[in-house]
Amino acid sequence: MKLNAGIITEKLAESKAFYTETLGFGVTFESEFYLLLHTPGHTAEISFLLPDHPSQQPLFQPAFGGQGIYLTIEVEDVDELYEAVKAKGVPVAIDLRDEPWGDRHFAIVDPNGVGVDIVTYSATE
Image (tube, rainbow, N blue to C red; front, top):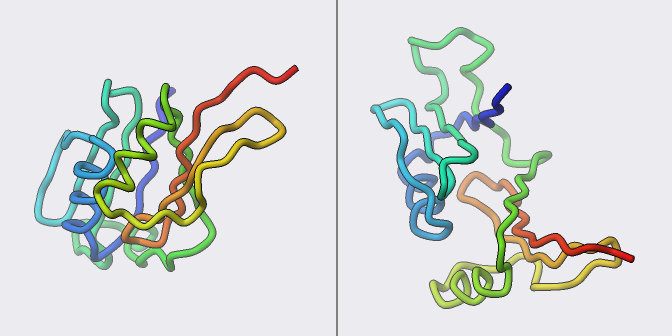
């Protein structure tokens, strides 16, 4: 089984720029109404779909409202990516921090209002 999260949004170009330029995602497929991106290493995908597109059933037509979901991206070196994100001028919503349960993470927000938690997990004792 494989999961591909999808966001229905008018912001296809903005989403493409954010995920490719900020996080190094690649483009798997792109059309005028649909964008499929993959993580470096092709281990996960995220898609973006224009709202109210006539090719889609009613379930897949309303635009995402911008609240209530988040994505977690696990990386090997969260400190390195944090510095790279800051150097690109991307606003950081939650500064780099350590949590008592073992996460070292920070968060940014994508153009659709989705919180993106970027984390390196460490073993807790």
